[in-house]
Length: 332
Image (tube, rainbow, N blue to C red):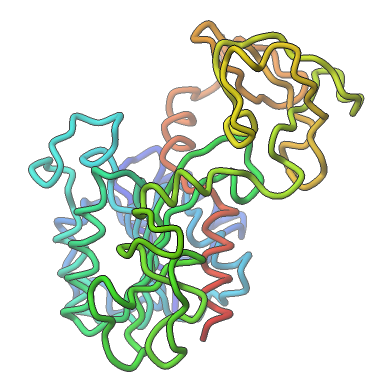
């Protein structure tokens, strides 16, 4: 059975078709209608359905985690603008709050597993509560966790909440007592939920809220905290001037802008993967940002720059999604 990709942005939709043709994501059909116009019967021919598909990162992450293209699953990263600090703050009144339409399709088609993602912030917590309530009403077990991209080796925070709804679990989790998350809160019994997932709504062992846990988990992987790549890529320790702003590594070490000056920072280690040789540019807003080595900091004449930036900006962190899916697979 082919996969179904729902993506209303024409530029991203064509990108999906290109990725399908190149074999980078599961083969299937791209639907440019809004999810509001999709009927449950339209989805009958499909084994996998990816809503708000963007450039297909959920399909890519599923493959990387070992999830076969013919294994049933739905995914959906509902628009984050209603609940993002970068949005207008309209919340549930924002017309881009499209979870009710996604929930209706889930209720009518009953996919065995649904993966999703949302911005992680206190403003988005009520949204996560709504999703949990809705899918538990449909008798799905629900799990969610907020964690930063720094947790999978990226040199930035980008907190996101990843969630999963599983129709094949026995029983529902009492709200606030057994809702699964990855690594936060007490483990739950294997027959009542996802064994590697704890509770995003409880205070957890540290007695903190989910948001506080997310912020507290911003320390990168071992060997990354406080390490930045130098522009020469030599791997030597060197002094970085006072930036007036802090990197993730600085924050993890408890540094303040005034204490950064003269701090010896090591070249990034191989644990950082793609970013291990990054150049760091000091920007006019007082922050350091990583770029590909040798990147010239001007983009005049870049082909389709606006469309590419929009598509990349709306995309998932593929490694974060892969690790979340892999954790789920280990639990079943």
